Image: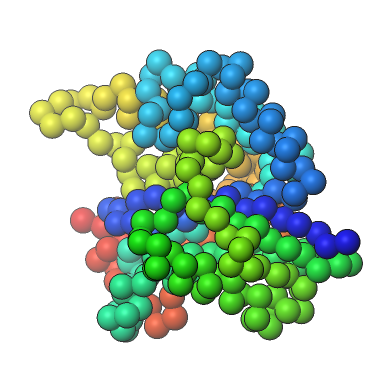
Length: 279
């Protein structure tokens, strides 16, 4: 009998001040999917979070509810029911040798790299083939472009590592979904948004003409700090701005419950003038 994994994907902040192209994914074994989805939905119901949960909706009034929801989600991660991966690019690493076609398709090329490497799928080491179902938050392009993208992602099955790991993705197992129908995606949005917020120094922003930060900014920083504390509970000393180490074993790309990846494309040139904190 084949194994089955389910991945939910989201993206955020294509062009940030210091970090850009934020991609996030949540992986769950299909045998755990109903338990996880029901658990999160029930927690949202308990907290009276009746609308869609999103990072952009974090306010002082909702801070405690969002913190409790993140507590519940990170408990699921700690229990091994959920794996989370975050990928982003750092603006000081400039990809200067991309073709026009590569620049036009950057969104899809980055998603391809993310799914190929971030979860370490070939290291699942199954005793039988593994089927992977992928749910993307609604893609921004038209149907024809979306179908080409799905075929492109499905072609991962033909790569050497995926064949060796018996990992199979078909176009029929790639879906576009609405995040408001999927609490798992909504939790992903909060984590992804918090990382883009902190890495791009949004926590320092003040309204024009004001000497103090707005209440919403303060609330978002407090939620980020809670999320970061839960990550550090898994990995003491975790640095959100760098790629998570593999501790001498590439299989940890699969085994670790939570990882970050600062993606640097081949041929990138380091520009010190774009380093965070550079005047």
